[in-house]
Length: 150
Image (cartoon, rainbow, N blue to C red; front, side):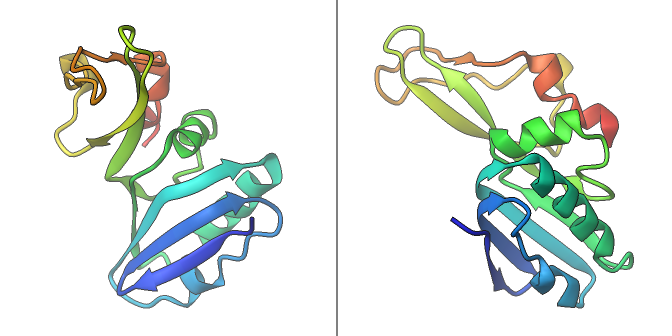
């Protein structure tokens, strides 16, 4: 599946795989004070895609504020491992993986970054299947390391 980009005003929704074939031209043509990239539907990013992504973000006019929203774990892992993956963008929200030890349900829960402080802990999440408390299914400090990089 190729990367598909759709636009609604200043919001661009990216859907698919970021790889060497990804075309980011719609982002370069945008004119306005801010651009929001909804990344919820990014399913995979390969190493060549990381390079293409960084180059693309750097090509967006520097007068435009960049925001990332609804970042799935596959994007969060790149933000954490590659310091310039976010470039000058501000991260608005990320999906965090949770697991229910009671019934085995796994779910990515959206966390809004505004006002979020990892020292205060993650929000309590109840399993939609059995109602029990879910556990964060990663290492909190490393998963949210991107916050220290920005």
